[in-house]
Length: 348
Image (cartoon, rainbow, N blue to C red; front, side, top):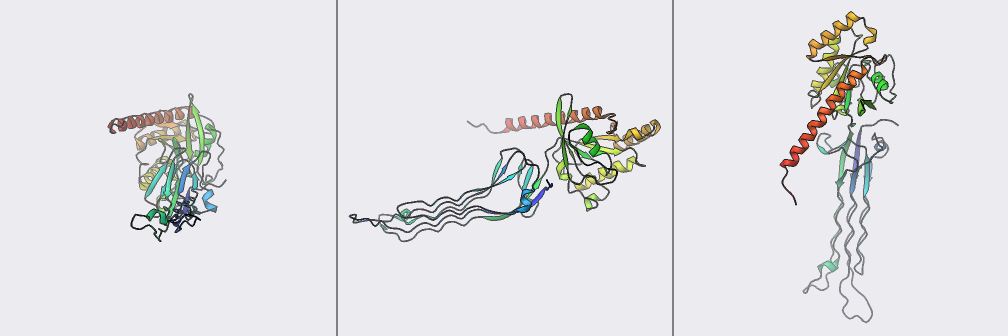
C-alpha cells in the first residue's frame, strides 16, 4: 500500500427538500384545508476516525464527496425523506485543515472521534405550516436551504512515542529493524527510506512505538533532498532519538546539521527531549570512539550513548533511556490533565 499523508478533498452537504403546497380533496369533507408537508433535511458530511488505517491513500482516487439531498414534502402532511450522511473514514492522527492549508479545524487523535465538516440544509416548510385563523388557505411554501460546499486538506501525523532523526545512512532503519518486527528497506546508499515506518519496541516489559522518517540533509527546510515534509510525523512524539553516524569524519558537524534543521522547521520539535546516540561504534577503534563521544558531549552538553544496531551493542541502554523519557512525558501529561479538571467549573 502506498503511503500518503496529505490529501485535498472537496465536500458538499445535501440541500434540504422544498416544502409542498397541497390541499385536502376528500369526498364528503366540505372544508379540506392545506396539508402540504415539510421537506426533508439534507445529509451531513462527517469525518470519522477508524482503526486499521495508517495512510490517506483512499483519498487519492476519490476527492469529491457529496451527501444526499433531502426529498421534497408531499401532500397528506407527509414530510420528505432526509438525505443520507456521507462519512469520510480517516486514520488516527489526522489533522483537518481549511482551504488555506494552515488553519487547523480539528486534530483527530482517538479512534471513534467524529466531526461534522458540513451540515445539511434544513427542509422547507409546507403550506400546512403557514395556516392561521386569518389565512386558512396559504398558497406558498418555503424552499429547502442549500447545502454547504467547502474544500479541506487532510494531513496525517503518525502517532508514535519516539521519532528517529539523523542524516541519511545514520542507521535509523537498521535500529528499527533490530529492535522491532518492522522490516524497512536497508541499503548502503542514502535515502533508502522514502516513507515513514512504524515499529513497536519493547524493553523491560514496556512497549512503545517508534517512527522512522527519511533522513534530513543540510538545507532540508528549504526543500533540499526530501525536505522536511516528513518532520510532521514526529511532532507528536514524546522524545526524539538522534542517531549520529560514528563513521563520519566530523560527527559534530553532522549533529549540528540536524539541530539546525529542527530549529529552522520551527514549532515544538526543537524543544522536545532528545536522546543522542553515537551509532555504528562497532566499526570504530576504542580511541576513535572515545574521541568522537567526547566531541559530541561537548557540542550537545548532555549524555551521549554508544550503540551499534547491527551488532546489538548498547541497544538496551538506549531503549531504557527512551523509556524513561516517555514515562516522564506521560507523567507530565497526566498532571496537566488533572490540573485542567481541577480548574474546570463544577457541573451536575
